[in-house]
Length: 202
Ligand SMILES: [Fe+2]
Ligand SMILES: [Fe+2]
Image 1 (cartoon, rainbow, N blue to C red):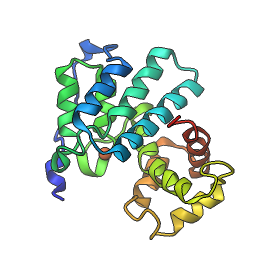
Image 2 (cartoon, rainbow, N blue to C red):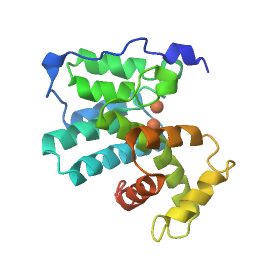
Image 3 (cartoon, rainbow, N blue to C red):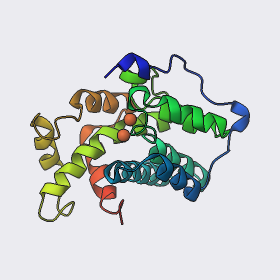
Image 4 (cartoon, rainbow, N blue to C red):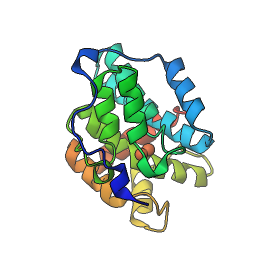
């Protein structure tokens, strides 16, 4: 994969005048369904969207803010299937064309600092980066457990993290980096994901 093609080569996104502009949940799903066929990818984005909204909710942020967090999570990989080489470029442009709130666009633009060349700065940026990789590994773990997420423990997840052959595509390095940037312990992040991922797909 040509990583340089993914580099966004800028650090400003959207127009500050569009602050507060969002699309509805239905419109966001319309965009997803227009661009994505892979059900697993849609499930991944739904999980991350749900985690983002749950996190903003636990922080007692307003419903408007919760919706912004949700949209960033739900749409972060929307262009991955159709435009993998330039992943992130197309969704950022699309949301800019739709005059969407710059905070949402910025969070999406910084969900892979290594690839897109944008550092996560805000709390929303950092949590999206933190949830992205780890939620996938935890989901894979749930699929191999007889009771799925039920009774899943932090130590079980950590064991899977140590086993580099398990969900091998998940970057352990990015997870450690994300925890450091978000100033959240790995244990707390795992716990949050397990607690909220249970109902993400219901
Ligand atoms: Fe991505
Ligand atoms: Fe992702």
